Picture (cartoon, rainbow over the protein chains, first blue to last red):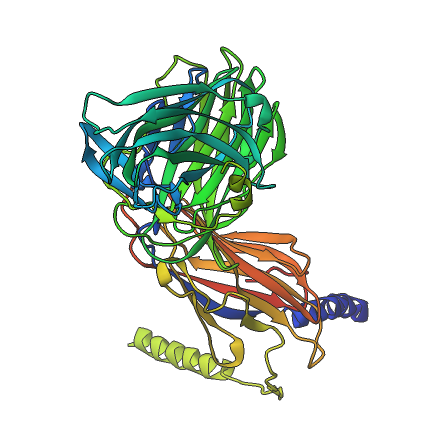
Length: 398
Length: 185
């Protein structure tokens, strides 16, 4: 009996011993020092009419309300020649100078394409910029230009014909898709504030493919009919290519981002969206330093086609510039809207990722005025490109 | 007089009984302590000492024998995510055994909306999340197989609109054991 009594606790001990014996734990210490820093990337309001931007505290989040409109708008950049200059000059043999005059003949911001020909040679020159044709349906297109031509004979008398107009060239094929212009005959002329001309020409929008890139070129031609040489200056102000959409749309910049320190890969990613009616939403990032665009984040007819943009590298830029532009192109139904919840993501290598919340909502009118130009704070010189990729197509115009 | 005699006798008896119980028996026990190399330790991740925001560095100091680590990071407002900062290593050589692991937060962070350590396996599966804002033991008992490395990511959320929190330190421990029947004390 006594043996049994002693056996029971012994058996219990036998079970407990291996269990307790294996219960070894090791504790390897670690510490994490968290040293927060001010945000190296912050948002800015681009102050675009029709775009209401509410930045969050510390400018690390943004709510953007965009009023879509079916009012006509201008897709050219700096057609007033009083802001940052995307125009590139293709010189001729006589028309070899292109400058932006801050003030000329009563106008503010005038492009002056000029030259002197003692031999009275015929010549042609161009100013061009790259445009992206809207991805939404366009009802009509209108080319408008305000110009004045100074012509002075070098000899006693001269008779000249000048031409002015536009050429649109497919950036993929380098072939002309449509063009238009006028010619006039002059003896001589001195521009004043009173003798500027306005030219309006319809644009064959049927020749354009939605979403494609084109070169939009202004052409300036001079021909001596009679004389012994001339000095000429084409003075241009307020060039526009005005498109009228079929539906309420928006196309433009909705947000800026700036880097204060560091180099980052940035992108925009869709979290969710909701739509009233059928909507399109395309968002693209543009690195201003190298004029590089990301692939778009896109929703077509309420279907997500691409839920994120590709990445763009962003770096610090001098004061007055912005590291990144966020471009929006959107179509909504009349009375419709689309709301999107997004993350702006920037990263260092594959190591550190920062997520800023962004909400963008596009709503139907009230109508707004034409897209404004950049404020007239700077005047830039033209970039000269004597041999653009589409130079062969321009030779046909000669 | 008689009473005092009785008291003396009682006192002597009490002393005798006390001395009588002070007996000791000594059974020999031999404890052999044989330290081994750490079978589980900290290792470098792909972003150990990599570039942090604004030109700073993700500083990771892995101590002697890789049995402790000190990490310094520089997050900013909103959500900052650090990928593969440090690893938990169960090496192939010397051949070891699987271990059960956990992360214990001893001294939590304050001033952060969220602060998490996320442990991922080789296949990028999230195994567990340790909340650095609350003391506790997280992830017990996650199996760390032999010849395996787990990745540690760190995620912090600092709400905008408030002053940046001062530099803060959270202390934690990597706990491991060859068994999972008993939770770490």
